[in-house]
Length: 525
Image 1: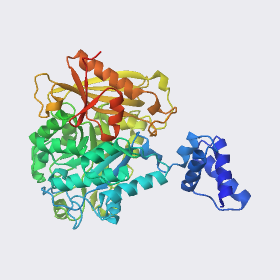
Image 2 (image 1 turned 135 degrees about the vertical axis):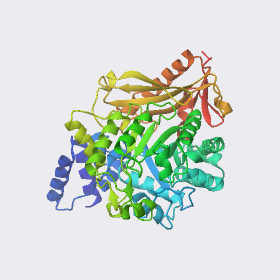
Image 3 (image 1 turned 30 degrees about the horizontal axis):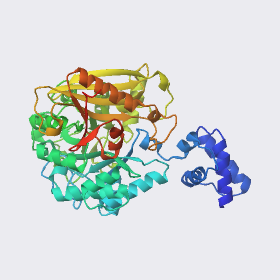
Image 4 (image 1 turned 180 degrees about the vertical axis):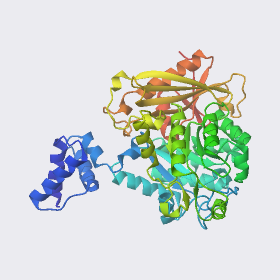
C-alpha cells in the first residue's frame, strides 16, 4: 500500500468508533478490497497513526490505540516491564530441582523465551534493554516508565564490579547515552525518555546481608525476589537447598527494614512435601509476621533434564502430583492470598518439550480463574483486581486500609477501589517500624517508610493528560494520607524507597534525596 492510502486508512479509522478487533479487521478488509491492496498490519498502522497524530492531522483515538497494540496486557499494570538476563555464572546452590544446563545461567534453560533473547545479544545488558524497548514500542506500548527486572539466579553472588557495570549499562540503554558512573546514570535517568521507575534483582535468602542491601540501593534496586521455594526445614534439607527457614525470615526482615518490595518464589510439589503441607506452609506465610511477602511467584515443580530430581524420578524416588491434585491445591492457594499480595506468575515459562514430568497446563492462570468463576468464587490478590482497561466509575473510588504485623513493625496497605473492592485503581504500602527498633541504614532511622506506590490502568506517558486511571491523582492522595498516618503515629520523618526515574515526582511533593532515599520532614507546616 502506498503512503497516501496508508494515511487515508488511518484518517478513516481514527474517525470511526472501532471498539473491538472484529470491527477493526472488517474495516481494514473492506478498505483493502475497495483499493485492491493487501491488508496492512496493526504494527504498521500504529506507526502511521503516531506520525499523523504528531503532525496534528488526526485527533487522538485511545480506543484505536488500544486495538492496534499487540499484547496490550503487558503495560496494563501501569509500567513497561523489561526483563534481562545475566551471563552464565556459577551458583552457590546445589538444589535438587534446578536444571544445570551447560553455558546457561543456573536454573534456566536455553529454549526459554527470555533466555533465547539474551543469547542473541550474548547476555549484553545494553543490547537486551534496547531490544526489549524497541519491541514494546513497535507493538504499540508506551515505554516512558520502565520496570527493570534482572534475572539470572543469585545476584549477590556476582562480583560487585559486574553488578555495577551491568546495571549502569541498563541505565545507559534507557538514557540513550553512555555515562561514566552509576551516579551519573541515575542523574540522567531522572529526566530521560525511558525512566527506570522500579528495579528488581533476584537472589537466595542466605545471600542477603546488610552490606548487600546497602549496595543494591546504591545501584537503584527497589525490589528483591527471594527463592524460598517452601518455608519448611525438612523439605528444604531434602532438596539440598542450603538454607533453613530462619534465614528466610532474617533476609525478609532486613529487606523490609530497608523498604524493599519483597517477592517470594514458591514451589509446591517439591520432593518430601505433600499437598496438605504445601497449603499449610503457604497459609503460614500470611499469618506469621516473620514472612508477609508483598508478591509471590508460584512455580509448581517440574522435572527437567540436568537436575537431581530427574534422576530421582527415573528411579521412581519422586512422583509429581496428579494434574487434578495440583489444580485443586492451586485453587486453595489462590483463595488464601490476601488483598495486599500480588501473584506475579503461576508457572515458569518452560517449553513443554523440556518438561519430563509435572504440570503440563500452559494456561494455568486462565484455567484456575475459570474454575473459580464456575464455583462462584474469586481470587482477591492484587493482580486479579487490577483495573487494567476495564470500565469502572473512578469518581466513586473509595479509600480503605488493611493493617498487619510484619518484621518488627506494622504494615498498612492503602487502596483506592470501587465499592465492591473488586476493581483496584491504586495502592500504597506504608511501613511503620517499631519505635524502639534499630535500623542498619542511618538515613532512614526513625522514619515511616513508603515501600511502594502503584496506580493501575494503561500506562500513561509522563506529563500527559487524559481520562485514564493514572490521571486522577490517586498517587498524590495516597502519599498525603500516608504522611498523615505517619505523623499521627509519632513519626517526624517519612522516607520513600523511590525508583530513580520517579525521584522528580517526589521532589515536587517536597521530598529531598538523603542517601539513596527520598525523605520528607513531617514537622513543617
